[in-house]
Length: 100
Image (cartoon, rainbow, N blue to C red; front, top):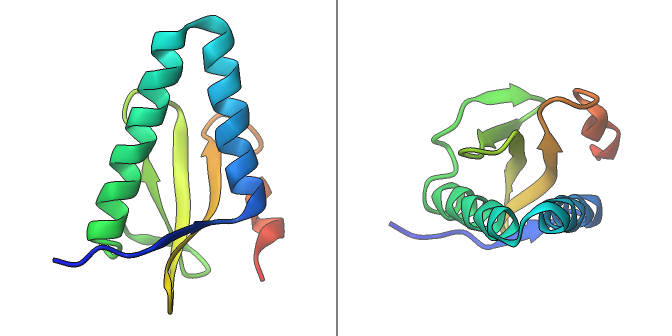
């Protein structure tokens, strides 16, 4: 089993930072748990990127455990590109404007 390199779209990286900041303002434990859930999801994606079904124009999504976020990604020649870390209850599909 090989793992893939993971690259974040700049707006996806900003979403991670914003979510972490929001959770940290409420609870350091929640913020750390959010990052742990994200790391677990990214590890699973890197290890087996085709595990999750296609759902939008060649993209896949992995739902975080315990948090209402989905990692939206696609396989590219250099590994994995994370297009969004999208909140599941806000503006569905907003990230589609980022598609190449």
